[in-house]
Image (cartoon, rainbow, N blue to C red):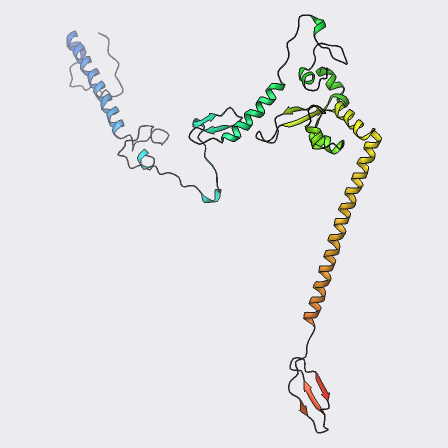
Length: 320
């Protein structure tokens, strides 16, 4: 029978033991079975010892092996020994939000489900959103080409329906980009400053149609009003008579504004000079020395003298 290979933990053979040649096959089989069972028990004992000494043993990298920390452990990293970190007061005031509790208010912002919502703000936002949605509705397109409106510039049917509905102007997107001096949009502030129009005129939808857009600064602010440049210019020419008259009015207003600014500056400068002069005069009055004379003393020649206690100035006079 061939000789079996010895394991790492198998002790060396001694000369006193009986050789395999003198043993029967049954005895050799039993011997191998007992040897394998002993090795299995030894391996189990080693694994059990490693589990028991898990907190104190180290791995080949000189680190504690990964394991579950028991509840009775005194380690500072145990779950029962962890303390909540204290917030640094130097960080200032801040707000904590739990995104898992946030709900969509359908008004353009998120709110927490356990907090009250400002109903007035939500109502205003919904009203402005509905106003913008009504303007963005596009009319149907007819199968008959003759019934569809066409662009005034290039005669295409692919017009901007928003411009057609709000400004009654048939123009396509391409012509808007190519002719900005005619079809560009102006804000309310630009109309007031450049064309000298009033708020009442700009709010009248019949005089000057306007397009509503969401305010870019804040959603709760009033909608932004946009006007078509060609319509604003036509209305301004009719109001002031001609472009030259508008320029003259603009120059006169600029000059008047400059005069008011200069007048205000001069008044402020005069007030500053007056207050400065009064301050200097008061300082001079306060700095002026006033003599504090003591009692008079009569000299041998019949003259009386008084001396200032502070500066030593002497006054001679004749008593009557």
